[in-house]
Amino acid sequence: MPTATASIALSAQETKLKNLLLDAAKYIDQSGTNYEPVILRWAGGWVRDKLIGIESHDIDTAINIMTGEAFALKICELCEQAEIIARYEITDADIGNLHKIARNPEKSKHLETTTVKLFGYDVDFVNLRKETYADDSRNPQVEFGTAEEDALRRDATVNALFYNLNTDQVEDFTSGLADMKSKLIRTPLEPFQTFTDDPLRVLRLIRFASRLGFTIDPAAEKVMGDSRVLEALRLKISRERVGVELEKMLKGNHPRRSLQYINDLGLYHIIFTNPASTAEPKPDISNWNLAYECLDFLRQNKTPGSIYNVLIGTEETSYYSWLLAAIAPWDQVPDLPHQISDKPSQPSKGSKRPPPPFVALAAREGIKATTKFCNLVTAAHNHREDIMSLKTAVSQKAAYINERDTLGMQIRRWDSKGGHWRLQILYALLVEAMQTWTVEPSVNSASNDEFLHGWQMFLDHLQELDVMDAPSLKRLIDGTRLANALGVKPGTWMTRALDVCVAWQLRNPDATEPSGAIHEVYKRRDELNVPAHAKNLTGSDW
Image 1 (cartoon, rainbow, N blue to C red):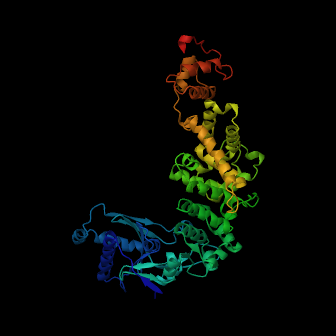
Image 2 (image 1 turned 180 degrees about the horizontal axis):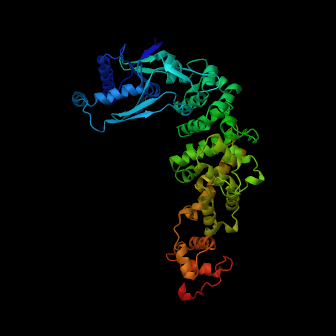
Image 3 (image 1 turned 90 degrees about the vertical axis):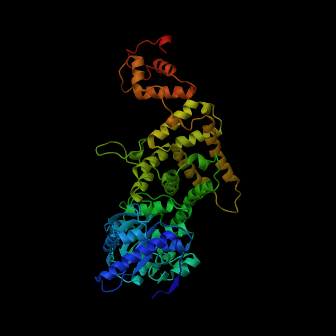
């Protein structure tokens, strides 16, 4: 029996969905094929979010005596009846196709699930179940179970609540309602057993605590950092799944809090590392918190033209910014000689190109980050010293900092190697923050102000020069036209020559035709190795 109950006020659309599902259960009961009535429950996240006022269009429906696929098929069958179509005013858009999601333990799918789009909701159907774990696997043996057994197998009490469609009551078998009121993340069973059964729950609890603004039960926190749990997390959980949980954390509303939990619980070297290698060095993370605290400060204090707004403008770059803060400590691990390269992409078989630096390996192997991100972080690592040098030159008002072509071509080079040149600047800022930033309330914030002022002045200068869009600058001339103008065939000289043309454009932003750029290439033809038979251009040619 539930330990407590509560009520939920459904919207008109939720009520419509509930009534359709109950009609489907009645339809099945009347067929006389089952030995007991069908009882339906909405489970987990939808119940939790509904209780705290968060709307959700993903609803998990748990069924007591039949599989999700069998029940979903009956719904589709029922919705073909004219009476039901009329009763619920069903249109073609209201009932989607049935999708069967196969069991995939490595993706945390321990049981087949069937999903149907109903009245705008993504409704998953699955039977109530209980799970038994072996010592060496996070993949359980799954059987039909009771509502209480289903609740007890879940990762947190706040995710173990049911809304019983037959009684209109929230059912609590695990103290979830009390924990919701206390804003507490607690495991339904003893924490050590919960986490060793499925170590992924360590990351899931962090995600839920961060997303909801709840605290984690101290008894669970104590176990989450246990060496045996950490070893189980390393051995039993795929790195892809670790990456998925981290992505959900960092795309949530409280990414800083997620990283703080990872730091406090001692999870860094389990998450951001290659689990298959014991020979790799480990980064010093004693000042790691300064990187994510600094980023959070920038986010909380963003204004038009501020560092955050200039460098981060989309959901993707926001997510990437937190990933960069997460792996920033690896930048301080010295590269091996064979890792030093300005080419961020992954080498192919037989290539002499060096492997990525340690910071990129941590992203690629630790969390299975995308190739796009790994290329970005490789470029950010390789270009950091250049970025720092240019920032210093701006602060010291070096003679060359007003050369629009010099700065614009530098930005184009950064962007061409790994993309997202603005995030490469952010990465340099965050790495520096680990030596400079302070979060101690007793320390005067003047040092932080000075630190940020230097970066703001750097970005302001780039904007004043109007070079922020240098990577997307449209050339006035392409390679074919340039070769024709010079009377030579295209060749290896072309790349450098076109760069000369772009640099000329940056020096001459009002130019609308390329004659000046062509002449610049002609003057430097020997330096650029343009074929010797290039025709002699006269003033009328350019």
